[in-house]
Image 1 (cartoon, helix red, strand yellow):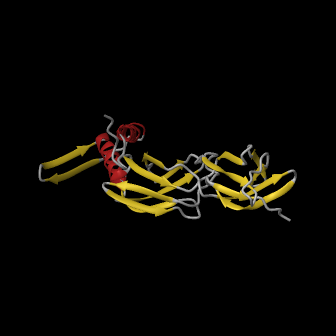
Image 2 (cartoon, rainbow, N blue to C red):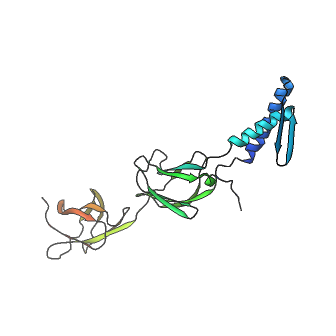
Image 3 (cartoon, rainbow, N blue to C red):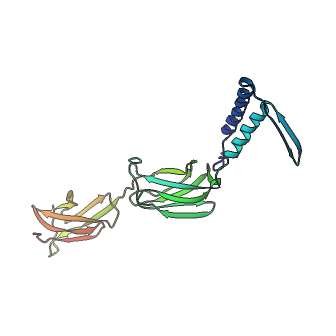
Length: 240
């Protein structure tokens, strides 16, 4: 089990560097500059008296501890982007964060980001569950680690649809029109069989409206906007 540092807490490396800085300051001030310092203080545990280089080291470490304290709250900014990179800004959708049992959902702005304000800084460095739902992209559900600046970039995968469009092309007397060319959005996709039936798989969401045209012997017999679905019946009528 990996235990992550608390949100905004200085790492062990920071404390080691702080102690090293204190010792370096003491060595420089009392070695090269031959300075002198002393400190006296009292507390409930008794009196404390420090002198010489230890005072400089003590002050550097204490000041480092003081200014290393994280703010009580931070703002988290989530910026979703598409599979082509951060330049593919996603400008619509919903992002949900789970913060200690509290679920917060917000819409993606036209700037391509979502702001979660006043989040307790105790979450810095911890993994936070996130759900990203954006049209045209697969729903993302994962855990993210938020950096100290609070800005998180989230890569989304393009959503790939696989729907079936099928039907029959026939005359008003219910006679099949075989060998007719079926165009969808001006692209030839298939031809009707001997029974006048056609079937094609499309990378579109079911119900998406497309322009369908059925052509026989260079004569357009049907042309209209229809939804992607099965069970279509196309009646052959000469289209001017």
